[in-house]
Image (cartoon, rainbow over all chains, first blue to last red):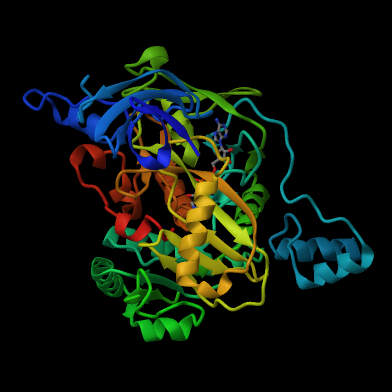
Length: 88
Length: 444
Ligand SMILES: Cc1cc2nc3c(=O)[nH]c(=O)nc-3n(C[C@H](O)[C@H](O)[C@H](O)COP(=O)(O)OP(=O)(O)OC[C@H]3O[C@@H](n4cnc5c(N)ncnc54)[C@H](O)[C@@H]3O)c2cc1C
């Protein structure tokens, strides 16, 4: 079990949907094909601290947290964001 | 002394190809009676300061690449480096299912070549890899699943693969322990049946390739961790990144220079590529599996259920081996979870209510390098001399032989073989993805 600190308190990971590495969507008016590729597919995938996005299915809120992918520790406060990674 | 017994033995050995001793029934009897020790399977040699090719990762992909470099191309100044021991990654943790009934024409051709190499492997490697062609059955519980299976069967048949959709009655005949009743939560509507699929002894494959490569001069270095990749001329810091070239690797046992470095590290692939300044479309997830106590053999085929996220096969020893989908979030931790076991048990019992009293012996996990389209990433990168053979997700064991053969050819000829051309890193920029999710997400 992984207890995730959400904006509404700790929740079991199985109550949430994992979105993945935190990214921000490029500006559709100016983005190059390479920028779209980076946004859509490429990942840092570190073994260690990473900022990631989760979705709270019950409260219908996206939020970001920092988790260590080698130890599953969390740090820093969670931050609600929009679907595209902007601060909510 | 042409006629002396030793000369005769030497001559006979030369005729048989010379080199290290081969395994044989006669040898087994002789050693059984004499108690003579078996020779080391591969040598333990000193690490050199330079090689023609350095392969990072001693799993089936790294070892097969080394084996085919030596066997098919005569390139033997090769080192395979592993931070732990050979087969310590996915190659020693998988559920050993092999098959070729994929969804895309590119995927089918590729995996079918691997299956044909597996078919002759015991002879080629002079080691029994226990390939058991027991048949592979993927159950459909929804109309959507049945539709995908019909699609897969047609793609398969066009390429000469034995694959067809069968009815619930035929499913019952093949595997009587399955509940094909219509009053279950997810009734079985049919199945994709693939008789050439089956299981193999994964450790034997790993050891066989290591031994074959060793006999031809390749060096295997265990407990040798790659800490950095040395590059020059690239656009990034320290000469890494696009436009540069590889000059060697820094390991826990010193620097090694090499013009060609191959990344065969599966779950760790992003970390290694990052050392060369190459970003990959990969995230790492654990995949868990479990095995029961052994019972009398009753399940003749491999059974997969995509809707129930579970698959099962029975080993020759009688244990049931279960697997599922990957864990739901990125992780480099192979601890395993109770949620997995609970969910697995629930789903398995839905398929086979009769085994509710069986006990699980153990559960484990391995790291999987997941790609967006469930196809691998193979070939060259923007860094000259740095090759990747990664993105093997939950389905890469079966691809070991064909990947090794193709990667060896790519390295030796400096040209990408046709069979792996669709799997290049550049497809993520061009958008030409090879979508295999429908055929690889659960049924590895
Ligand atoms: C539970 C489970 C079930 C599976 N079932 C199936 C199946 O039924 N059929 C199928 O086809 N596939 C299956 N797979 C997938 C398959 O196991 C893998 O895709 C395959 O084994 C990958 O092989 P590889 O040689 O690329 O990597 P691995 O075998 O993972 O080897 C990578 C190696 O790289 C080494 N390494 C990492 N970092 C470094 C470093 N810095 N320096 C040196 N060495 C390093 C590691 O120690 C490791 O030995 C399964 C996987 C799991 C976990």
